[in-house]
Length: 387
Image (cartoon, rainbow, N blue to C red; front, side, top):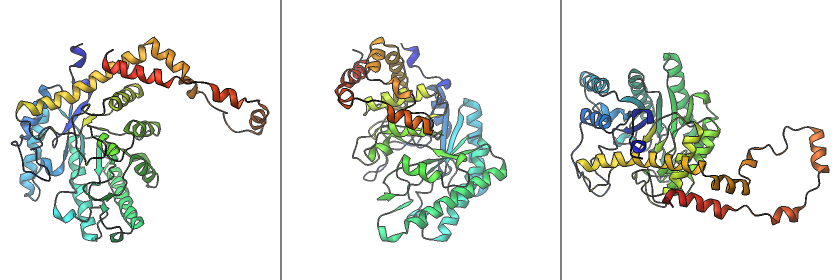
């Protein structure tokens, strides 16, 4: 049991530089613990069996510093990666912290802000390619409005698409082995954010010049903030081959973004999510975009990281046991779970239409059947609780 819950690099668990090392600052209070150096962060990841690390450009290289300093910071990071065996699993751009982004980045009303944001991103795409990151994420935290009259949404989406198309063209021109992933979020820090959910982002991607290069990086907390099922959203992303990356954490419904330890809140939803990822053959990073509680210090921040991975592995084991349980198979047969995989009518033809119309159905008999969902759902709970 203990071996199954001990993470190894083969599990492809990853953390962002802004996660375990978060200083505990929030909108109402300053830092509660000291920062963790990049070198110590990577050594800590290696010690606990993690595989990858992700970064914003400003996490890694000092914003506004001379190029020589930024180069030295990048080289030091590369050296630590080599020493620890940790890989760079994802990169992104900080387009939300500096005051210049207060009206947005790619969708700012100020054309020069938009141009600056695109240039800033291009420079970090070069860094991501140098580090071998396979995925580049766009979280549009400032892409939105407080005042509905302040932006024409259709123009904003045009500018958003223009930026993504430009980046795709740049990557193709450079020959980089890099894909893009959009990270939806309904609100915070903007009151209303563009591309707020998985569904919005999925539809937007289909309008781009190179839709095959752009997918999703959905996050547990973000869909939960909107009261949506993260499990269902991820399932559709997998169905459309658009799950390029995933952010695992936890969240209480109806709250602002909390970035809680994975598995600390919605344990049933997390069980179904892990089962889905394990069954689907998803081979990308399992990236924890979460932060330790503000009142943690020292070893506590690494307990947080271990907990994220341990809970994922425990739920994966529970999911395997669930699927191997003959009672579960029987309950699923009663619920006709496997029948859903059968086609309803097949491809269209006039002959098929006629056969369908000639078929005799008994609506009362169909209405009278039971699906046994209560028993099936209780088996989920029993397995999670270890009953």
